[in-house]
Length: 414
Length: 95
Image 1: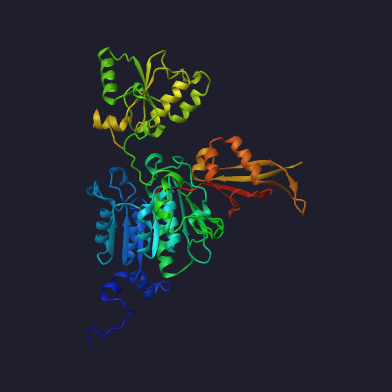
Image 2: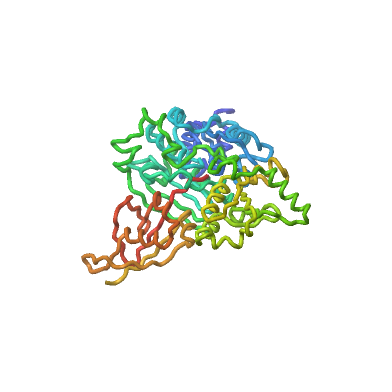
């Protein structure tokens, strides 16, 4: 009687692999088959995308597409558990595909290493049944949403920063709202927090991404009730969930309303970076701001020389070295003799009229050299100091990132 | 005129801008409903909060307001009764 058994369309290997969810009365073989026949596009192979990719591959989703333009960095490893130490420097989408293949070689993984861009958005989304937004910036979120609306794909959206998370399934079910219905006004460019600047507790995107994987399985199989028409919020500090009831589709919505302006014909040329809160890709490295002229800037090597000259004079510095990064960053690494004055505090001190509050930091007439992480904030700070009457403030070009790259490689890059 | 006492909850970036997780807030009564219960409005609340926490200004551009965990349409002037819980929920972009 060898080979004479009958089943629900899965082979021996599959039954054995997925047995623990096949025996679940609420799941069963029919739903496993649905997973196998489904395809999911995961936008972002970072903190959120990590558990999404791992759990969906493990669960037996047939085909998974991963979009990411970035490479794995050391500072990703604390939360992006798809990637391991030996994958630093590898393309994230490629690294993700290696990890998923290791976990489940029967899942087909497709990598999209150019990132999610308006020009290719629609084509990408149309190649899959369900889309998971695991991106890290508002512009991409709006673009993914709009493509999902046009292509009529459900969007499983998650976000995490600091110790907070949010989750919702958009554009799904009877009259379910899209992302734009709920958040019609994109943030002003630069006002949105990024993990790279703001920080994130590693496990936070892990929790939200895991929930995204769950919602994706529910969308594919139809079991249970999706978080559609609802926004789930997670507060990691008190370990609490709250659910906000949302409105349905909005007639005024620019993406899904009857008079939508973002359509199949316009999406490719829509300027998401200008209209939806800044860059779609965190090109991040180095200063991109140019607030100051050359005469207000000094290089890291010049700063190094001036520090050494002072050592030669027995430690008598003829300048003040002001570090304007947030306090936690100053606490884990700073240059010797630098004084900490975070941007916020500087703003407060400088607004005290004629720089009254700056007295404690500015040493009668000495040059003030301002340093930050990447050389953006420091330029803004120099400008602010000038306005407050400090005439001889200078920006240290490229910040501590450049210091590490050009002067002292032992200084942490982060 | 009496006052309307509410609870305000701050989430994510709103919590950081306000520096508190939640607090009791008193608004001046703007009128009474059919049953004589005093009410204030989301408009008055926004004004009060912006006065108290100027850093909320950027956040109010994108924030979702929820009264008793029910979404308030953008720009709508919603009546608030004593004991209502108003949440400020900004979108999170990161991941």
